[in-house]
Length: 126
Image (cartoon, rainbow, N blue to C red):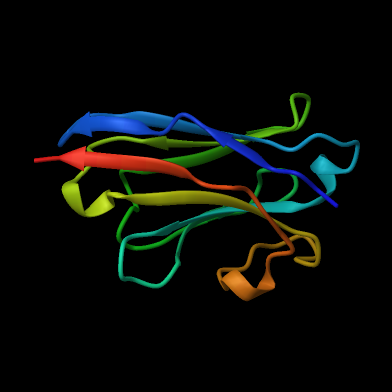
């Protein structure tokens, strides 16, 4: 069982920034792709960004491209999501997830990820 722990959520005004972190204890963190998803009230969970094991392959949802940056530090077993130019429509619970079967790439389907964090709330006020 892999325990993922998100942090860094909060309340921010539109146009502001937040950085989310996701810690994943264990020696195998550097072997797996990681992703960020979000879920707003009344909506389905949606893909935000993903990064492969080395950081060499990154993919973003169109809705966040140019505003969000995903990165990872394998020495710290941590993946980050830097969120800039936040909009009210970015308000959601944000989840990190680990994909143990991506085979070097990244995937965008939530059902392809094996382990999930508990989520962290991000609220953007207008």
